[in-house]
Image 1 (tube, rainbow, N blue to C red):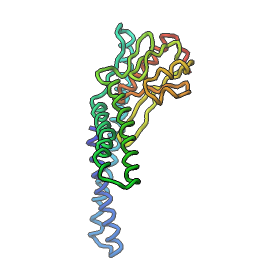
Image 2: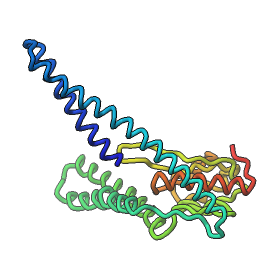
Image 3: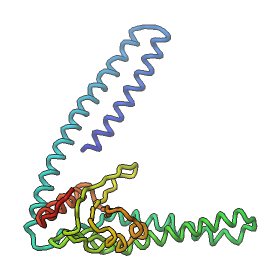
Image 4: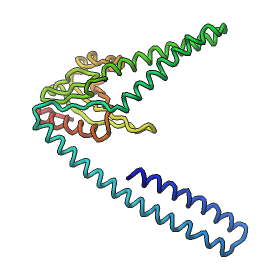
Length: 250
């Protein structure tokens, strides 16, 4: 529904802009009754945009209230449940991961191997070699992430602590803080659960990504390739379990 409203507002906005441009042009030439006839074509779509925007805001508030109720319900359910709270990756994320492996891993390697014999120029050969090395490193890194994630949960939260596909169990007694970090890009929202620990020298070397192993910060970043709603639920569930475990969160 919100997407339909956004598209309708965009189309009405184009109608308003086109009519304003025509109105200004007609004013520059001469003022006539035809010029005045343009005013309804500007005013009515503008009122439509205003009405739709107010409705859009109300829908957003309603959706946020419903999400808060769902988060509260899911959190209480997770606390009362004897089973672990588990989140699995979205299929969209897995397909994107496979696409990136093909496009940025296998693709550069294939092109480099195919084109290398055709070029005798040293500069071009070096460029192809760099492209192949990039494809190999990037492809292996993404492939490693794919196999870590495929068929396994993204995150598992229970009375012992937090487990993640990039990190083994982080015990509650070692956690000093946690929060949800969201990065907004043109491709969508990317979430990660940031977990602060009091002994990073123990946990960082246990991280399953090369970058994570060499971090010296006390903050461990756990990517959440799930929907925005599920990411917020995971943060709430983690916070509730942390309070139950008497963690002193910052």
